Image (cartoon, rainbow, N blue to C red; front, side):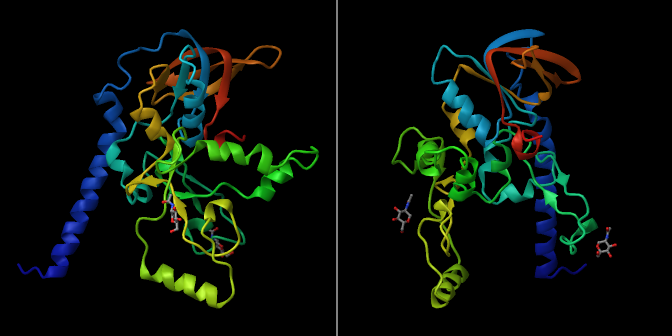
Length: 298
Ligand SMILES: *[C@@H]1O[C@H](CO)[C@@H](O)[C@H](O)[C@H]1NC(C)=O
Ligand SMILES: *[C@@H]1O[C@H](CO)[C@@H](O)[C@H](O)[C@H]1NC(C)=O
């Protein structure tokens, strides 16, 4: 048999993809092998101070903030897996889309868009693991457009993005070693191609603004800020896992099915399933729904 260089490369490439596939399959069940959930069996009626549903970017930040008070016990329920620090390699994020680490949603077939895509539908990645969609995306950090927030305050005199939203963004941000508290590391791109400098040059020639602060949603062209530190993907969940917070009880593979309400519409707990059994957890102070952009809004 005769192999040329190209077919050897192709074989190697196929083998790597195969290995990655095996690794993903292993991770899917690793929470059981590694016994992340073994220490504390869910008792049928447990009381916590707060229950946070979903351990994505928002859930991690909220849980950590609540747990600053060491007397407060927070239960953090995640439908997906713990993952693995190998998945902090930035380019792995895209490979995780359409695997068990993604809820694998697609839009309905579109009539006027997505016409080049399979079934005229676009895929809507949403993370199903500790770290949430922050584990699947391209790590670009933007705060959101000020006018979107100002629209919320349209009928509230004296309220504005600048006064009531921006300070909270700043509070969670951690500009590499500048601030101590934030959960969200932000850095400049550690690598960019020649092409990006040509695009910026062209934009400048065409009189577009060049911005250094893309995080502000400023109009113009610029290199994005990313959620990364030392070239490693960063989500707020990393902070949770690394700085062990004993009063946050993180449980994975728990699918929350229902929020339980008193007659006065006050939430007092959640019903969730784990390995086919149903459990109830109660919260004396509140239930926070941070289950992603699709679940939490419906
Ligand atoms: C996708 O859209 C095109 C153009 O509107 C249409 O001809 C085709 O039948 C659509 N395919 C599906 C699977 O809906
Ligand atoms: C990013 O780059 C800009 C411009 O080169 C610099 O002023 C800024 O300090 C850098 N920020 C971080 C977080 O490294």
